Image (cartoon, rainbow, N blue to C red; front, side):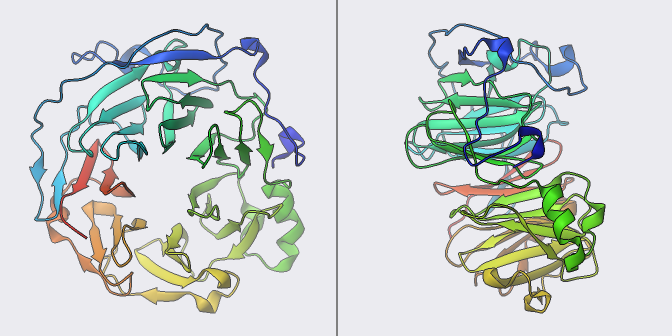
Length: 400
C-alpha cells in the first residue's frame, strides 16, 4: 500500500539479505523467576532491528507447574489477575489457540510473553530466544491463532510464527522497506494464511506461511488524502503518517482513527485504498470498532459514545450519541462478547456493561478503585479479559 514498496497487486515482502533467506526456529522457554533475563540488560530505546541469521533448533515446550495465584475478587463477575510481570509492563494483546480454548498467550511491551492453560486465571512467563539475541527491547503488538498455528508481530519490525500451539516459534524476516510498523496480525482460515497490518495502513496477505505477501491496498494513505482534501475531509491536511488505532472486524473490514483524532478511515476487502470520513462530533476521536455485523461504535475525548449503521459512515447525522455516564473519563475500548452483552472500558478503572446490545449501560462501580486505565478488551473461546496499564489484567468470571 505504501509508496516505499512501490506496491502492486502482486507485491512481495522479500527476506532481508542479512538472513540469506534463512529462518530461525526456537523453543519457547520459561524465564527465571528472579528476573535474570529482564529487560534491564537491554537498551530501552527501540530501534529498527535487522534480522540475525540462524539455523533451526529442535526443541520442546517447557511444561510449567501452575502455582495458585492470589487473584483478587473484584465483584461477582470480575477478578483482578495476579500476573508475574513488572508493574511498568503494558499488555497489548491476548489470543487463545483453536485446539484448546483454555490455552493462550498474553503479549506486551518489554518482550512480554506469558502463557496460560486455564483460560487466563494463572500465567507463566515465557521467552523466545530469536527475540532476545540482538539486544533490542521488542514490543509485541499483536498475536493471533487459527487452530495450532499462531503469529506474533511487534516493534521494531518482527514476525514470529508457530505451528504447534507455541511450543516452537520461527522468526520470519521482513523487508526493511516494509511501510510502517506491524501493528496487527490476524491468523486466517487455511494453513499458512495470515493478514498483517501496519500503523501506516499497509495490509498484506499471505497463504504460504509468509514466503510471499500480496498487497491488499494499492494506494498510500498520503496519496488518498491528497486526492480527497478538496472533497471536504476536515483535518486531512494534518495527517502525520500513521493511525492511532486500527480495528478489524471478523469479515476483514477495518476502521482506523488518524493520529490526531480529527478524522477516520475505513477499508473493506476488495477496496484498493482507504476511504476517509469526517468525524461526526466536535471533539477529537478516541477509538472506533464494530458491534455485531451492522453497527459501528465511536468514542471521543471526554467520554462521548456514538453508534451508527456500518453502511452510513459518510453520513455524520447517522451517528447517534448513546448515554453511558462516563463521568468525563475517556472510553478506550468496546467489545461485543455475546449476542446481547457488550463491554466498555476506559480511564480511571472505568468499566461498563450492556446486556441489550449496547442500547443501555450499567457501570461496574467496583472497578473504580483500580489504579489504572483499562484500554483493551479481548474475548474468545469463552475467555474475556481486560488489559490495563501497570500490568493490570481483569478476568470475567460471571456468565453471559
